[in-house]
Amino acid sequence: MGHIKLGTIPKSKKWSVVVSEVMGEGGAGSSKLLTDDVEHIASKTIEAAQGGLKQAINDAGLQYTFYLLTQIVLLAREKDWYESLPRLGIRISGHNTLFDLTAEMQAAIDDYLSSQNAQTDISEIAQKAAGEAVFALAIPKAFTLFGGSGEELRLAIKSLSTKAGFAQLTQVFFGRFIARFLNFYLSRITAAEVDSTRLPQASDISEFNKTLEKHCEQSARIVKDFGGEWYSKTEYLEGINLDNTARFVAVALKKLQAELEQQRQRQ
Image (tube, one colour):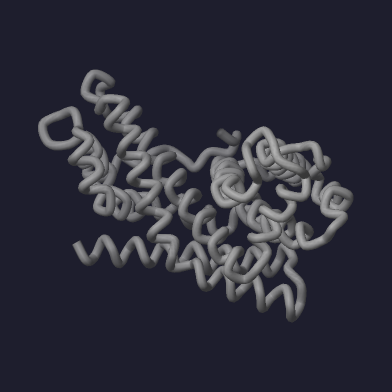
């Protein structure tokens, strides 16, 4: 992860609750327990990780990553997409694949963060979430991972440049970001406080991760329409830049945080 850490894992009662719920009653957890209680675990983790979320709201890497997504999809509207992408630090050709695009995205974000001395764990989580979101939404239209024409790839990304397409991209990005954010804390608290002999089986953890990811993506519906509206209106009225993107990201995270808190309170 990045060299600027989120801080020492707190030894509070909240974290003890998280650990006991991940592990399950009486020691090693079970797949059924983990998947059935995912909402409860997710909301408890959000409650315990308030400090990390406050940092995320103002994280330059998260802000730039989302800004880069807006620019990539907007440029895909242009026929000379491949000639325009180097402006963003992305260099691919019509012979490259979706995999190459996502790799170049990561490199472009790395270059920006290095120039700003802004590498953090949050920015790395955002990078991975962006790559996953673009890949998940574009792969059905980009033919295959290793094949297809350059025009197919451009059109696949262009489909995310509409109001509806970007709304979907917003939901998937923030869903993947929050899922990785929660797992960042969960993995560290279990490693720090739980005897390895009592950890759940790998298959249980894998199942839990899938369910947590699905839960977070569903929860991120709260920012789906908001993202589409912001993207469409902002691009039309003033153009999307890093400053207005940063403001959007802050509001979107607060909306998602509030949604998870409401889920916690309803239980």
